[in-house]
Length: 68
Length: 259
Image (cartoon, rainbow over all chains, first blue to last red):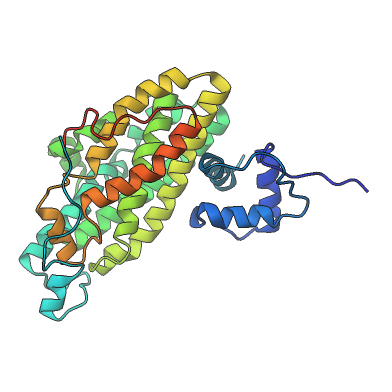
């Protein structure tokens, strides 16, 4: 069975996975460290790429909250 | 030019005046000490001046919404401004509770000078400039409202955390739009130009570092921090976000008018 890897290089995929895993979470209430913990806890998360910077968390927060 | 120290004067701490009176805070309708009433009304009016006009004339948002380059951007901006209109109503209600009846006429005819900078925001029609404005000024709002989340005027404390959370969403959206403008549309040079316009204005919005009044807010338990402390914390947070996009934050004192 194949699995889809989740990583920072696909922000939309990352947000889809976070929404599915944490449907009641408001990302505006989480700081970067808290967001990082959720990301690292995702099944199939691949953290082998470059480390996310503060702007990556900000963009993640925006996409998660504002949708589409 | 230099900036002054960020510590309150001796004998002043958060709520020191309240302690002297033996109270922890006030609710709507309470009899307020004269200085307290003046200060809390000022705090509310600064925010009402910013956003309560939207309750009377929401067409002010048209420019900003139509500046978005695509349907997704316009949808997001419309949601964004729905929250701003809600804030406008909240501030209008709290002002009313303090005996200040804000009307459409007030906003049309009697706007105070300090709102001038915010008239610039309403006039923004360039998407990249708007992204810079939201990245900077809405983040300032996060700092300002979080700092008042345990304000001694309880109706204000009650709304401050909610407003701060909304502003977290607003500044994140501004940043995401800015990142797209730079990375997908090659707008780095334009973004740098807008940054140099808005960065000093945003730093100025925190207020003068040597203001005597800032410590009266602290003494009455309305605000926790002085202007300079908040400004420095803002800079520590915003600069890494900007540099990650290839932008160069201007010098701390560049083009500043209120030190």
